[in-house]
Length: 407
Image (cartoon, rainbow, N blue to C red; front, side, top):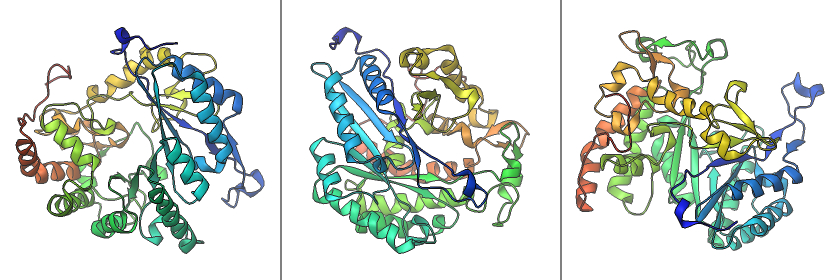
């Protein structure tokens, strides 16, 4: 296969490969403990995936994303085989780019040297201070290993970023987390993921709850969400605090993807983040047995697109099922969202979190709506200043060329 410049405008297939799934020991499952064994993607399926994924890409740069539990548990030899297969099937002129998600606790000198030699981009999953990052049984060891692993990545000049979950507790100390990532780890790109989980008794995706009920939730024991789920107002305060710290102290030195995405959308461009884009479905998810799902957040039977052993990736991505999934994000927006001044930069955020009703009783409102609106309002002026300082025009509206949704 060779790269044809005439087809470089074809859709890019993006996929995250989950290489590992935990194996629960039935004998110990009653005690909610997992055995030390894993289901891993087989060598044959791995080769088939790499070969077919490369063959169906028509772009100069071919990106692989490796994740799922802790990929480094597969061992260095496994990933050496990954690189070997990529080079074996790489077409002339193409560039292979690997992204690896890890908690960094397994990173050794050998791992760091390998990742540096092959240009891996590493995303370190770490939630900050000890009680947020590690299990209660081994709090010191887990965090210490992660810090050592990141230090090795820095020593060998491996490009890395951090992603941190923000729960009800950590949302109360945004600068503690930010300074830990910046000063202790040396992270220059930080992504934050809000913890939003419905309580088991309420986790029916067909149900939604009044907006007023969400606003009234101030108790850690509220019946709607799990105790670790942050409150909408907490999310807004967390993001605003981080933005102020970044704007006045780290502008130009630290990258906050949420802010960078807003700079793009304030200029009338499409958001680079799937959660804030106008449609879903641009990032497929592959499980270790070859099943492909519409999204990492929707690994349920009704969102299964097929299996790489039987269908092509391009067929699954461009098929009618995935198109409907993509369009559903805009189609499900309530009137309140369509009238919002920040529709152009939010689009209702991730549908997975649309569990509320508007004041008018319409379904489809995002649980974090209040927090997002607070954040967008807070940064509006400064983002506009940044754009003007770069010599660009502030647009702040949906561009018809990239969005055909209802106004």
